[in-house]
Length: 223
Image (cartoon, rainbow, N blue to C red; front, side):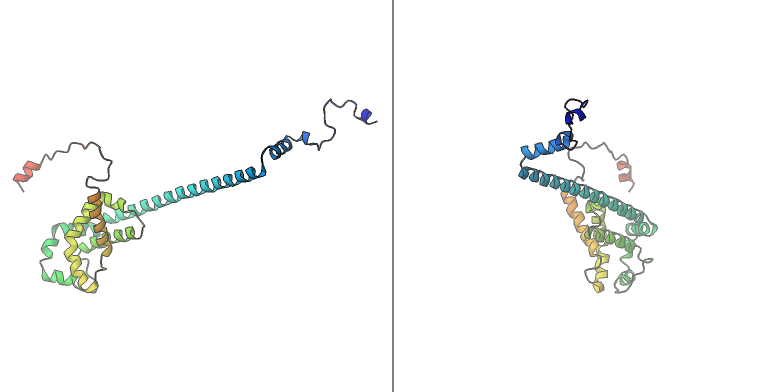
């Protein structure tokens, strides 16, 4: 009877649909169970998990670097705008043109020798001190890498400390040495930077472009 019922069924067709032969994946699973020891499968799974975790960690580090670079760029742009602001530029102009003469005035120096607030209208040079001190704070706290500032500005910062040192010394008489300490630290780092990179941070061996001082003779005759 069974032979009659199965009459017309293609030769080789499985009469039992649940048989492993009907499922290629089951056949592969059986083959793996026979050919690969369970210990090796477990080790492979552990290795694969470690690779995935490592790749995730690397991706997170790359993302953190991008975020930090973006934050530093934003901070640098903000400080650059502040540098070119009117109060800071007027203060820097005062330092270059008037400070040396004004420091010979006893009253000008007495204004600095106080534990209170110094008038920035009378002493616009303090706008520059405050600006550079804030840069030093940002670098000290790790909010900005020092090379972003020292690469273009180390010489200026070093010279500014030399020029403004007497002013800071007078102001520290009643305010102690912590006053403008971040500016002092930044100037210290600027001097180390110049010793480390006397020719700048550019790669060694590059060819400098010609830059003749065509006005040297004229300016020497008419100082």
